[in-house]
Length: 188
Length: 308
Ligand code: FES
Ligand code: FES
Image (cartoon, rainbow over all chains, first blue to last red; front, side):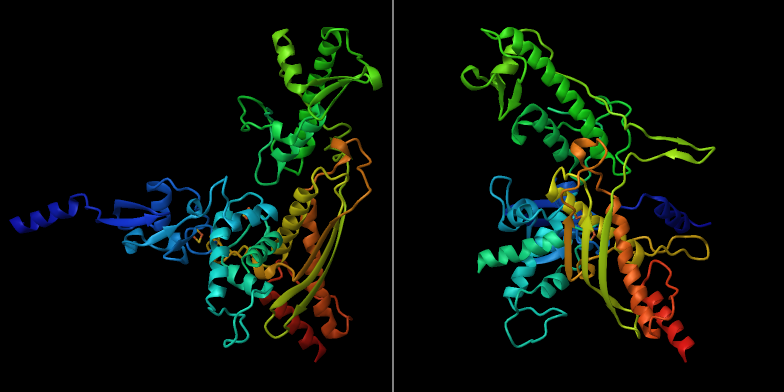
């Protein structure tokens, strides 16, 4: 047994250093610089490191939409992206949309239409719903868009298709589908 | 402030309990609050299950509130100057009202309870409720396990693609019986959600195990709960009106959590009916649940092969 071999053995036994990186995120208008384990998802960063627990963890693999937030104006499943990939990005969570006294129009529409029951999916639904209206306004087609050359209309089919990534186990879909066009109408 | 033994899980139980107490004490809903359900306040709670949350806890809250009301009436009758007429005394619109016409006296709620407190009257009360009449003899398999029944009817229209087995629920109409609704908005939400869950149970929510007995449909990617596209294109839900519970339940209401779940069966039945149409309604199609598109396609093939 030679010396180099035992050095190798020692290195294998040493506790592995977890790679960490420093990242700066702009969350709801406030800049945060954090040093994180590289594997930390954006969702865990928001919830565990910034105490913004409005975004929920339903499945942690991009299937339920409960963790939907906006990154630079586009919706994203925060459980499927690592925080360190978002240097300098602007992130808006439900906490940045409105407050109890000044609800965002979409939040107000959800209240008006009784569009939730347990509320677990609701923050994701609201963040997604706002993004859906923006995407339609920006003429981004979906799977059900029939005419790619005409301006896209806000139809029930368009909303259903675009919201299909947000599950609601309480089955509050019918009222959510009333809330979203209400906001569209107010904006028109 | 109320503390009851039920768990709020989005079904609106807290709201219903607040409504009960507000009604019994003649207060605005805004002046009634709930504190978190904890067994150090209400020990030995019954589980919030079997759709009994409002039935049990609502009745217990009502019991407590009415005892409190009677105590305040007794106190008010003897305390206030000139004496208040105990008979016909009532709590309405945040006031204690006694007497009628000329001799009517009104005392605001705040003043009433403050005066009662200063006169060393207890302002807290505990209530209890046990569902009457129910009994069951396991050995004989006889008895009355339920105090009352809730009824509902649902009709579904589906269209299906017999080549791929894919289908759409075009329309569903539901009429559900909640007796005198405690809160129609909450109850309709419960009926809609119950229906959707029942439909998922019988159509898309498939538990699959591999040869080793490991559940492989173990997340939303593989275990499909209904989503927006599965919501019937036309979905009408109404509560049966004018039929109070014939038993003396909470304000003659009925439980609403799980009963509408069963209405989801109409989607499965409609799928079978659509399949039967392949053989001019002369067969009773074999369609296991959950009726996934795969099973619908296999059922369609079986009917077609038989017909050949
Ligand atoms: S938690 Fe992110 S999609 Fe479910
Ligand atoms: S409101 Fe409960 S999951 Fe959507």
